[in-house]
Amino acid sequence: GAGVSQSPSNKVTEKGKDVELRCDPISGHTALYWYRQRLGQGLEFLIYFQGNSAPDKSGLPSDRFSAERTGESVSTLTIQRTQQEDSAVYLCASSPGTANNYGYTFGSGTRLTVV
Amino acid sequence: LAKTTQPISMDSYEGQEVNITCSHNNIATNDYITWYQQFPSQGPRFIIQGYKTKVTNEVASLFIPADRKSSTLSLPRVSLSDTAVYYCLVVLYNTDKLIFGTGTRLQVFP
Image 1 (cartoon, helix red, strand yellow):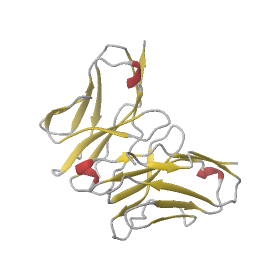
Image 2: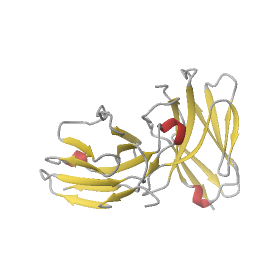
Image 3: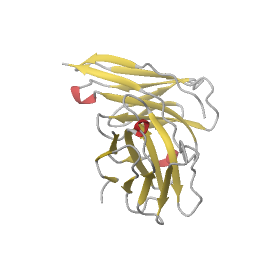
């Protein structure tokens, strides 16, 4: 597609349940990033994929968070045993190369609400 | 990564020029200055990037003094649709990860 697509756009889940968030990057973009944005806050880096390299997981807040990416296509962010503090907008971005050269293209995010 | 400091919020009126200044005192030689714009319920959007002096595109201008310890994003003749959060980032050339701060929330009034 023309842009980064994220699904679902909204997700309400009960505390303790697992959720999966999906990101379809722009075709051909080798780099993919996940961020979390709490209400009224800036973006918090979570994880970064670049081609076939090992992902940079340095931003994942706990072992309940994990992400996978199939080649240079779709990525899934999984949150296990969700907690209320996980409520946020989860943003995915992709880039054709290094972020500084090209900038990121962001999706519109998945708004996660844990009740 | 160089820390940035920018105002939390700014107000303006339609038709005015808006200048948002960002401080980055410990910027390194190979760092670039990049600005993103985020509208409500959307992901951030790349606006402009520069290394020194002045850069201009169809959206904004970026002014960077010789010492590069600050930069100013200039939005000419703002409209209501420019109401957004503006993020200043200092990024190492060829880096793979962008770190966002809390940004400047610009509110444009009629």
